[in-house]
Image (tube, rainbow, N blue to C red):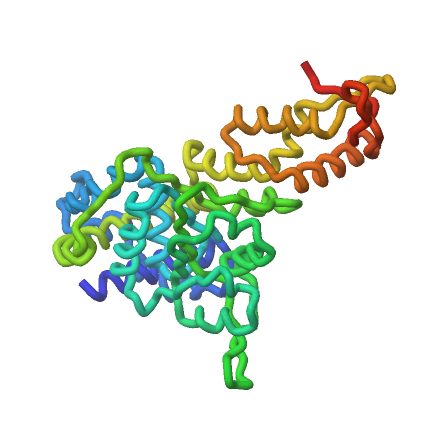
Length: 362
C-alpha cells in the first residue's frame, strides 16, 4: 500500500509540475512507466471492484460537511484538500470560510490538520505578516492556518503579502538571533476562518484577488455543537475514509488542470468572492451606475449622494464605506470619469460640498 501511494503522488505531482511549469519535471522516461491510471489508483488505494462507483464510507464526516455546506462548496473543499495533501498550492488560491460561531469552521480546520499532520501545519499570524521574522516560521510547512481571523484583515496594509505566500514568489526568510537567511517559495496552502464575510481593500487588484480567493460560507442554520472530542473520535473511526475522500479530491483537481489549466470553481461558489469584491468596490460601482452628466450648472451635494449610496448598498447586501472613504473615492471617480472637481452646491438654500453638472440617474 505504501508503494502504491508513493507512486500515486509521484504520478500526480509530475503531472502538476508539467501543467504549471513551475520547476523542472522528471524526464519522461523516468516516470512514464511508474504512472498510475485512475483505474489503478481506485482499485489499489480505494479497494473497489473495477467498474463500480467510488463511494467514501465516512458517514459522520459527510454528515458534518452536509450540515454546514452546500454541494458545490463541498466539491471545491474536496479539491482544495487534495491540493493540501500534495503539499503545493498549484492553484495559487487562498481558502476563506466564514460563518457564525459554532458553525463548524474550527472543527473542519482541526480535521484537515489531523489528516495531513500537525507537523506540516503552521500558524498564520496575519497581524505579524509585515514583520521581519514571521516567514521563517513557515519553513517546512504545507498549510498555513489562521483561525477566527478579524473580518477586516484583507483591508489592512499587509494583506497583499498573502498573495506572495500563495503565488509562487521567492522570498527571503530571516531568522531570529541568526545571520542565516533561507529562501522560500510562495507555494503554501492558506486556510482562514472568520465569523463574517471578509472585508477587502481592492484598489487596483480586483482581478488579482479574484484569481486568488475561494470564499465558502456556512449554511444559515442553527449552530452546531458537536461533542468536545468530536474531532478525535471522528479521526479514530474514519481517518482512512477521509483520506480516501481527499485523495479523490487530488484526482478531481488533476482533471480540472488537464481540462482548464486551473482549479474549476462553480459559479455558485465564485459568486461569494465576486460579492466580496463588488462590496469592496461598491463606491465605484455605485458611481458608475448612478451618476450622469446634466449638461447644465445644476448640481448634487455630497450628502445627497451618500444617502443614495447607502440605499444602494442596502439593496445589494453590502457594508457601506465610511463617510470619509466614500467622499475620497467618489471625488476621485468623478475627477477621472467626468473631469469635475468638488464645488459649492446649494441644497435648500444652504451651500454644501458637492458636484456641479451631475445628477442621479432615474
